[in-house]
Length: 204
Image (cartoon, rainbow, N blue to C red; front, top):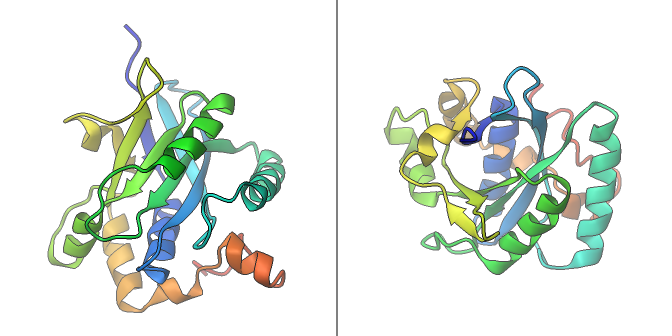
């Protein structure tokens, strides 16, 4: 029996994606997850970095293809590959994984079969300042044997973890200080190439 994969996301990669969604609260946004299979433990996918993609026309292929090529070129030289996809729905009460997210997830799976899709959980995000929950404000979707995207079962919470336990405390502080205003995505970069999609100053 093959061990079920576990996905471990770094604090900065996690926070960057959530801040991107908060910057564009009333529209859908997406992002790319970068990492590798843990060399010591092949049942763990390490998500080390993330790149905020778009906040408009998420389904348009040409900008997506340009973004993926640039992301792969930059992070490939650092030994990281694209290992998954992040999506935040337009409506607060929409907890379904839509066709755009599934299609992009399928595309990534061609190159990294263990890829996951993370869907922002708005209810968990809203409750964040009130609670002490250390689990990610995201739902984990993985492909089953029939190549359909399924929400990870009751153990989904234990299969998606943040590497640093205090990440949600840090995230809450950033939300309070409106840090989300500083996030740059690929849409911003395509509008003004001086805006850096790598967000090098975000956590300085």
